[in-house]
Image (tube, rainbow, N blue to C red; front, side, top):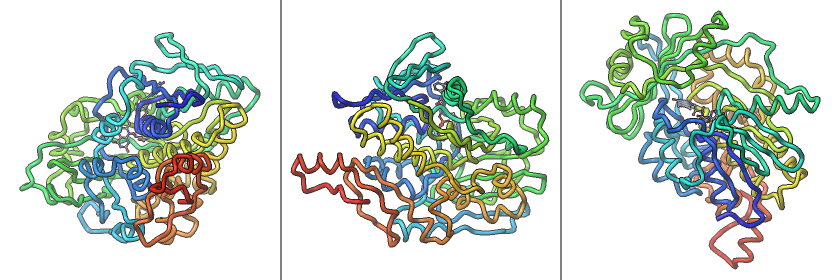
Length: 462
Ligand SMILES: Cc1cc2nc3c(=O)[nH]c(=O)nc-3n(C[C@H](O)[C@H](O)[C@H](O)COP(=O)(O)OP(=O)(O)OC[C@H]3O[C@@H](n4cnc5c(N)ncnc54)[C@H](O)[C@@H]3O)c2cc1C
């Protein structure tokens, strides 16, 4: 139940970031509505990697046990050459010791469904594609494709990589004589991906199916930029992805792929040469394509994109709308954004312009990657794409990119520290050997706890 003084919050997009934000705002008692462009949610996508960085917050929200039921744990990430020679094993076990939590992997459709089950139905408005926004220092109004309009105190753009809210916000900035900061001066390297979830696989034919621990493998192909990776998942399934990379796509090619962002497509259109590529768990990619129901097979073009303008007046961006990095970790970053932003919004005494600006500034200061290396798409891509630099990357690099200031020294301890909690919920005591980065406690929550005379909750710094 929202409080009478609650700001009215509009959320664009019912993806991972938008729904997680909704769950947090529900707990905060703030008034929110989610506007999703699709008329129904599509069960598309492959894997979401969810690390220990968010598990304390998931625990606070009471969702950890349900998340574990739809996830497998990742203890080792193995990187192979195409001939199955092991290049490197990235061990995540030590991170569990440090943080008290596993790294989990789940399929995006199931994770999305779990989040959806925690948001009251009446808060989600389907078939509401936001096409424009008007804002001033008092309110923000969105207009949807069906001509409906909604007005609120602030707008959270969680509408994904090709965010219409971002475009509308940039237009508004330009109208106000400001230039949105977007890094477009460097050639972008595009990654084309096919992805899906193969189902009903026979455990006799593949290693690791049915085990609690996922086989998490990345295979660097001999062909330029060809990489395939997969996680064995619950219920004899494999979440798989096949990437090939190019820095020579024509603008028309890119547009054609972009327009099919996570959309289903016929498997017959996949180059048959890719089918024979082998997996380290036995079998080949062709078997994965064939065992993937057609409504769960999608393709997407991925380009890294971290624009520097994340908010203007009463609008703020989170998740892929703010920063798109390479896949599997988009969900993790969107969730971290939602946690930090909800903490700041909860603390606002009211929704006047000054308080909203302060909340957005706080969010940006914590979540924007300040390290120059993190802002250079060329350097990021080079690090990720060039053959042997995969050694630096899989898992750790991606995790580190969006939380860079905490990872200046890349020690295990440093990596494990960033485990922000929801400051308006009872704190979860640290379960690991590594202390988490201190957070400013919520004064408002401390006052609430005091007024309720509760002794069972803690509002001390987490
Ligand atoms: C169908 C689908 C499948 C995906 N599969 C994978 C995957 O397998 N692996 C992976 O790593 N990442 C995948 N992603 C991306 C991943 O979900 C994100 O990187 C990450 O979760 C960040 O979440 P987000 O909320 O910022 O964006 P998303 O999860 O992409 O959510 C954005 C939401 O906004 C909605 N939307 C878009 N435009 C508008 C608009 N104008 N008005 C209102 N709503 C709008 C979209 O329909 C979508 O529901 C997928 C995304 C989608 C939409």
